[in-house]
Image (cartoon, rainbow, N blue to C red; front, top):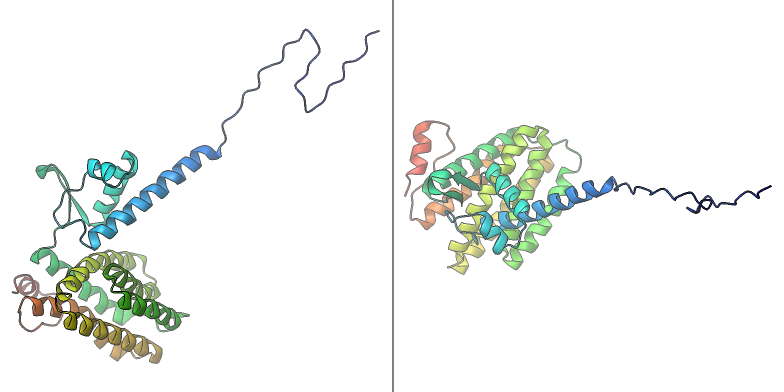
Length: 277
């Protein structure tokens, strides 16, 4: 009588004369997900980097932005480069112009500036009417953002100043609870940041003008916070549109322009803004 062959459940040993079946190693289900996550994070990092260089004018308005540039200069893979360009087109910071043979950083000429200023005044005027004073923690959040804003001003980081300023305004927009309007405000503030960087760089030629403007900005932020703390809708409705008009006032001052008209949605007012000297 043959003795039974002992086998270990952890071993692939089989009785002699019977081949060991090949075990198919299944690919890990997490591998595709990890690759997708890595690709997504690469694209997100690429978008953040290129967006920052567009906002701080390192990538000049009107300059060509194509795959070879992103691959060779920014050291991106082709897939993240293509996806980054698509994202930036969707954000309106890059324009696809097939008749000119590619994609280009959005211009910052007088017409573009007029559109940005108008949109900025519009979102801030609406926000002044709809900002929720009973949003939990809004005052504390704005004060914390203001503290970081002050630090950025001391470091004279124009990209940092405009980034925290955007955060300050979007915190108020978030209190409204309207996703579509928030997305419009976010898009508007990204364009506003580029305009503000331009203004800061122009004002930087005269340090006293720049310092005075930064103090004005900080003071107006404090007044906005105090109005929300007091739940003073009337004050906020005056402060926020005036704060948004600062960009227009500063630009017209640099260009030796005239007085700034209040916000109007009439076509004649828009055209007047666009052709102002």
